[in-house]
Structure formats: structure tokens, C-alpha cells
Image 1 (cartoon, helix red, strand yellow):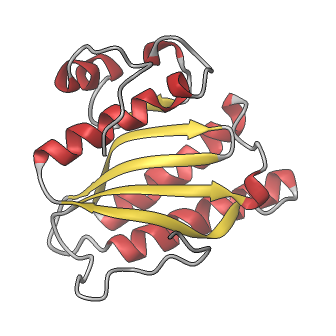
Image 2 (image 1 turned 30 degrees about the horizontal axis):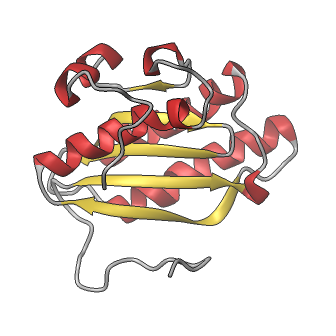
Length: 170
């Protein structure tokens, strides 16, 4: 059962060269991510946080009321808890400054990925999100997905060209 206050893993320190699947929901699930100006503002702050926290943004998707991120620590000092806190603080601050509204729900969801196969499944899920929601027929057509390391085509090639309307398995 999911709660409104998901906890971190008690036996995991969130430090080092790990990959994470993160989901942040907007406050009251408000549709905040429907135009490029808002997405660019938030993405700039998350990218800033990634650089400062030794993380790479492997994939992201801004859905109208939530954000999916696939991130990877690039150093022994990469701290996912700090990344999550700073990404939400920076982006929330600048969003509220410009739009006079709170951006994020307090809690988010994270999943530590254990192997390359899980990473490919999550990348497929992230790219497929707007297709499953009926926003586009092809993941290449959705303007608010991407990666700071790969092109969308490279990610699609890695996960295999499949029918994205029906693919989901995690």
C-alpha cells in the first residue's frame, strides 16, 4: 500500500554510483507542466542540481502533473537524498517566484535500480508515459522528454523499438 509519506530505505545510504527512478508530483496534482517556459525553468534548476550534486540526468519526462527522472550518481560523493532535496528546493523556489504558487508535493517516490535491465525498463516507462496517457502516439513527438546524456532516439534504440502504447513492465 502506498502512503502519502513514502520513506527512504532504512538499510541504504543513497551515496555513490547508483541509478534512481524518481517521481515528483505537483502540489495538489495541478497541471503545471503544460508549456515550455515552465518546463525549461524547472529543468534548468534540476540540471543545476545534478551538476552540483554529481548526478547525470539519463532521462526525464514532464507530465502535466508530475515529473519522472532517471538519474545516476557519477561519483562516490553523489548523494541522492541531497539531490532530491536540492532539486525540489531550487525548482520550487524559482517556480514560486515567477508563478506565485507552490510547485511540489512534499514527498516523492524513489526506486534504487539494481542492474542495467532495470534501467532500460525505467527508460522505456519514462518515454512511454505520454503515449500511455494519450498525449501523443509516438514518444518522439512529446516535447517535454529528454536526457542530458542521450538523444531520445538513442534511448529508444537502447530499449528497442517496440509498440510504446502497450509497453510497461516493472
